[in-house]
Length: 406
Image (cartoon, rainbow, N blue to C red; front, side, top):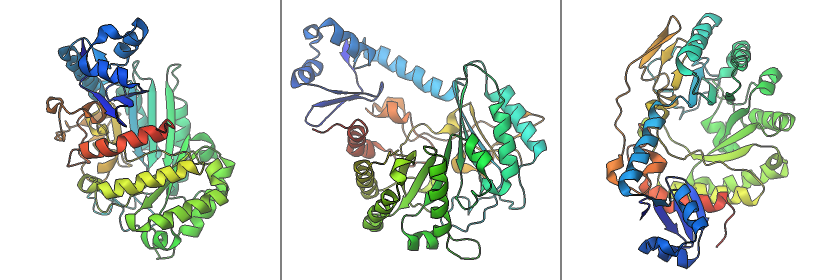
């Protein structure tokens, strides 16, 4: 038996994290010494079995590698967890300067998903994406601004809910700018999540995310959030775009959210750095920006907000055979980060016609990185390995998530 290659010790060896099983344990110094020196005969039977079960101890490094290869293969080829992105239109009523669709090639703002094309998408989902292995389906209702096409959004939701399978769990997430929520109660009732974005300060937000006519949107979106987050408690996700320079202003914005009681009704709040152009070119976020985001999440937790670190990394959905990212014209894309940019196929006669995605991973299993089980090689959205991020911030987020204080 061997100590796993993926055991990582933090906080003066008081915390043990295994990146393969993602198990986190507080341990005494004696356990650290046993694992370090591989004196496993000093462990009692229950602890030994726990460590084997949590992959902290492995039969051999060859066996561990085989397990990880199987994990990577499943991440690529399995249909157990399905990811679907449906874009209803590339049209939008806002003019955000940093929108990732600004430089896209396949934009036609006059086109909307219609019933005929939706039925072809639905047929492809039922025949080519969901199968007997499928247990979890995550569907993102996307755009442009999907709420410009409300009747079709509701129709799609109803049809998806009618896909019956006693073993199937389906989660629907609407991503919207939040300006068109009025008259959409039937949609809001039937989705699981609604994500909207606010750029923290009113001044910054109105500059970054104005209407097409240049008027600010902050008041409209914030008032909509106040109204509907209380009506549909625990559904709304607030994404806050931030810059390092605006840290104090974001803190003040969170105080406003708390004063208005939103910390009690939001599903969670997340913080993301503002990135311009396409995500595949700009996903590499500075360590300073990550430090700022961590401090904001810590403040949010301390003030009663649930948080989710949306800027986590992992194997891109582009590599997964069960990913379907489709627009209103039936064009297919590797993942949400490439929508309206690099089409890799289409849906014809209810069948998926897709070219093989040939995108280089930023690292591989032979690099022998302790964090490889977390990222599984990443994907096209990052040009650089995120090892530095994992080393510096992952333990902080683990402790924050599990309320561990040392």
